Image 1 (cartoon, helix red, strand yellow):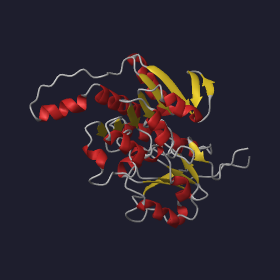
Image 2 (tube, rainbow, N blue to C red):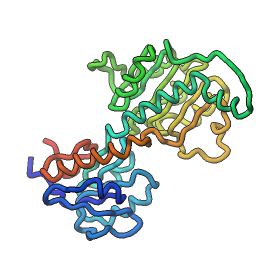
Image 3 (spheres, one colour):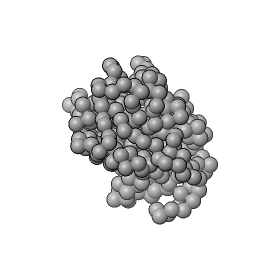
Image 4 (cartoon, helix red, strand yellow):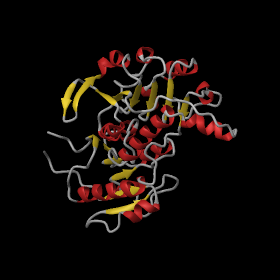
Length: 318
């Protein structure tokens, strides 16, 4: 392999992130670039690496076109859909691991809220109504987990104390240290024996619409669909039909489109819970992203390959 690319100037989108990187290793410089104005203290031609904003739509990506020598685009999210296209030939790194615990706890929270009727209890409370009811609960449920990456592993570990019967699904069938992983091509068959379907697979061309009409139709009556991945992994129209009919339940942190338009049928469904894409957005995020970026900067200063590369760019392997 040729010499590693040299990253000497990195931009971050907030003052807090900038302050958290101090002291920087020798030879490294960090500057503030919030994409609302020009970078502070650096010209566009000086920038080697950019930390993308955590949120704020896609408008900031236009600013990347001003950076002629971009080597690395660093996400603050686990998902990176759209970033390789924005980065062009530059490398792209995700923040995998930073959001794993928070997203996993929300996934379990959504399951519990739906399966124990907590959402219904909140509605009853608002009307001062005491309305006890027996709900399915999580113990002994047949749970199919679609996605066996870092967050998938965190969800699986948190489900273990609840004594569920867990089936895991990955892109291909294999065995790992957690046991059997079924392939995505088995999903329709597995859905027929699933009471809770949890989706945490990345969004790519092979997973877009993975949980579609066939999979949803195969789920038994009363099954719960939990999506903490990306909205387009699940066919929104097909899911809406099943939920509106009352046959399935849904607990969704992500939707497609996002947000759902006003008046969309899912908003008014008593058998649906919708949270506004907050899976990784807990108080754990700030210290974890700061620690991750400090480690990333240390690697870049040492001339090492960045962590979590999803597009290698100038760090060509081989």
